[in-house]
Length: 385
Image (cartoon, helix red, strand yellow):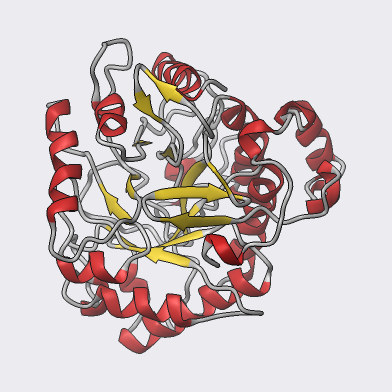
């Protein structure tokens, strides 16, 4: 994306917009009537402008204004942060007929990827009303069975040559259009270590990176950030997606422009790991994960460690995955991240039961369980939404 001083004057920052104008009921009506594109057109808030995401120093800006402008929580600065949640399977499908029945909806006995995306979009206004400004969605999803090592399903928006599947792009467009309309800034992941083997070689990975970046840019999305590989230190088949070389793809994304605009990009590491200097230097923002961190003090320490890296120059630090909760306690990983001035993101995997979590299909994308309600409740309190 353009840096702040290149962004034209735009409407008020979404934190201040009357998001209630776009209700869940209105979205469901539009979806049922086949009018989703019209309901979510960029001009439907009366502004005619695209939502933009940019960075200046260690702050995020939406539409040229710092996020959560002027907000503090218990003396901690919220302004400039990007609170988020891992929702990576919003365009999920499974081309493996042997595993596809794993994801069947309990009421129909069938898996339906279109329904999955429709319900994702319908839930987004309520997330936004609670102060959620970002979520991670992924072209290769995330493990739909949580932490299993064997992943026989085929959930990749890329074919073996790196070309993008049209049905996946159609579903992704629904989500990104809704995010644009609501003033949200999604993190779009390209590759996941449980699915990168679907691409036959490194050339296919590069073609896929170029194709996805071109698609985002040419569709006019200025509110989307890129995560090249989720946990690049994971079990990737292709070397270029691993820590020693993933900076090459980060630089590739950053080098691509359309009408003078580019995308912000980075790559994440697994829980409790500090990114390498090479990746930090190449990235527009630093992605870290809180999985495996039971002590909130370690979360703040991780942020401090990143800032002490020789490669670090002032840029946002963002947790976009953490499976620790304790939202009812005065100290937890979410609060600890903000104490260190880092954005924080929920990971709630679930149980494949259409009730719990935000990752294991079939997913109920609403704020329907005690854990989800606790997260969004604290988020609303912290952000003043």
